[in-house]
Image (cartoon, rainbow, N blue to C red):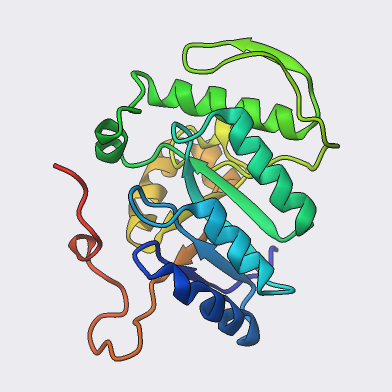
Length: 224
């Protein structure tokens, strides 16, 4: 049985200058994992991950998640590979769809989100494995690409639906755990093979007196 790990989330609406002290405190408290978010128009996930890794020595830093349409697969693989080499075994890269409203707002909403996810994730995995390849896909167009540095392994991919095809593990917000369970339970094979990695709880900040877990509307609103 896999041992339970305890972690904390540094949400993207927090000030980035708070992250170094937050990460150090999380490691000092003995937590296993620190997760940062990448929400559109707020802090960048790669920069936040690098900052958290730089000020800690042991704790695993997870990025959940990078929208696959934000970056070219080669650019994403380069960023992941760099952090993986600088901090071996401590960085977990998460990939996902992104909020559709935000993706539309920045002109990046794909016509076929699952196809975009599959092609991007597959390309990143192949790049991190050191493969040289070309891909003429519906979303990804690459020609004779290969990372020049040695292989560093592959990222863990995350999406609640189609978990058998695209996921090594699942990461979900605490508010989405029920929906994720229902999606996975539609297929009996998924039920045992894929469960959420953890429930991520947004703890109250200093001075907060009310609910520890925010309601859906408490976070910055999605674009209309």
